[in-house]
Length: 329
Image 1 (tube, rainbow, N blue to C red):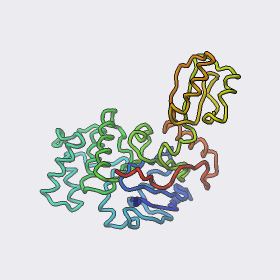
Image 2 (cartoon, rainbow, N blue to C red; image 1 turned 120 degrees about the horizontal axis):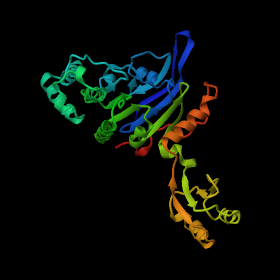
Image 3 (cartoon, rainbow, N blue to C red; image 1 turned 45 degrees about the vertical axis):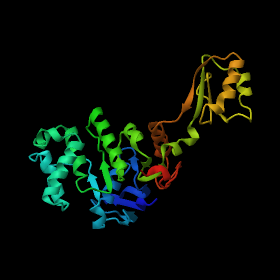
Image 4 (cartoon, rainbow, N blue to C red; image 1 turned 180 degrees about the horizontal axis):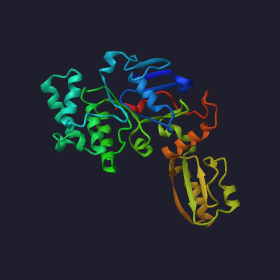
């Protein structure tokens, strides 16, 4: 599978020697939804602006849509929703879309039909004649998403697309992103809403101090912290714990309390002998199931690990930097 975004060594140093990016490597596969996350000041928006040629890098190599960054033909195939975008408040939602369609060279009849289609897609069909000045922030975001699709892009780059959108609107946008993926488009998301990313992204990258510290699928990034957890109604005796640490059983890892046992196992079959042994000893089982750290847990681990580290080197990075085979539609 080819990489839609394949960039290496991206650096950006502003005046007064402020290093926003310190050598970013990033690969995004065709047809996947890719999430970029990190704390404020990590350099996420700077990286997006470099890809979109809004600002120039201090150093950069690689390609977007198979062409060098800034190639006009490649840029014409990208849909872009900037963070903190501002459309003229005196324009209607339809006029905004038709304006961007004209800028993309779409013929008048075609862009009118496309504007109607996209306004319906983002749930703004009933407000297409109203001026943007009367829209809520969430409504403006919906129109912003629609304008990013006017040029029928292969790659859609969205910088904080759900900012200011209510829960119902965020659900609608998630559904739209899934629909775009099903059409074969690649989606690049920069967002601070971790729960939103976890629900839609095939892979994610976490940036701290201007570097990508880890990237991959959430399953890949949490593999060594996931497992089957058994919780008893009362503390499990040490003698029973010793018996359940046998070489023939899945690997036992430290539990979160005296009442729990955690095993590196992915299914219930692997832990049936453990459950049988607990019952034999009269231990009452309260719950049992597979648990995986959330994206928020992973995010905080990476941020906490790297906040105290020297910003010039990657520490604690894991997971594949390559797009997974299952990422495309």
